[in-house]
Every structure is written in C-alpha cells, then in structure tokens.
Image 1 (tube, helix red, strand yellow):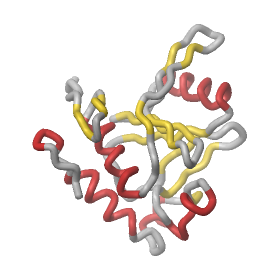
Image 2: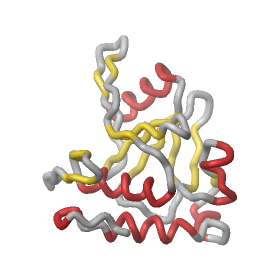
Image 3: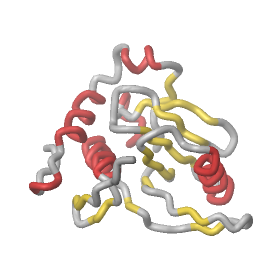
Image 4: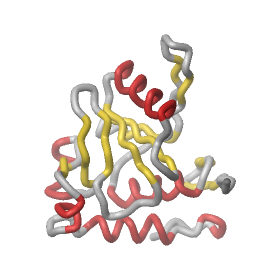
Length: 161
C-alpha cells in the first residue's frame, strides 16, 4: 500500500496530494470549498469527517483513490441521511468522466463542469447520463480544470495556474 503524502495548499494541510488536487480543481471551477470543516458521530456510533464542504452548492465531497468499500459507503449514506445534503464521490485524480453523487432521494452521475453556468446559476452540477455524454460536446471546460489539478506541484508552492 502506498502512503499518502500530507500536502499544503492555500493554507490547508491536506492528508494527501489527491485531496489537494481536488481543491485545485474546485478553485479552477470557481467553486468555494472548505476542508474537513465538521466531523459527525451518527446514532450507530460511527464517526465520519467528510473531506470537503462546497458551501455554494450545499453539498459534501469525499475523495478516495479507489472505489469505496462497504463501510465507507455506509458512512456517506449516514452523512447524506443525517445532514440532508448530497455528497459527491470523487474517485481518483480529476478526469473528464461522470462522478457519482449520492443524494437523499436518488443517486445520480454529474459532470463537474461550468456547463451552461449550472454551478453559479442553479447551485448544482449538470446531471449526466453517460461517459459518452461527458466526452461529447458541451463540457469543454473540464479539460482545463483537469490540466490545472494534475499539473499542480505542491512541493514547490506551485498551484497549477
């Protein structure tokens, strides 16, 4: 198993480079974020500290290097149920692909894009139907956000700009 490297970005000390790359991605999108702002202890005794709170979109975001295991999924389900807020599951490095969002009533895939200004105007991301839809036209900005997030070199104080 590879050990995560604590990484500093914008005055925050992230537990991993992967989390810091997602912070760069959110900045590139123009999405305000807060890192590990609040921990929870649910009725079943499980404790959970979500990675990001996206305040303007009123949703959580959880970053993982690989698909969530059963116990991690249960934590996210508890978070959504108890806070009545959705949670984005951000698996791996930022990429041009749909991302799963767990909601209270329905789970959907979304495009992490400024497509038709959805984040600013409607406080949400565009709900996508498939990988092919995101790879098609209309989401051209994703490439730039991905480039910025992946090119950040935190050890030298660079931020991918």
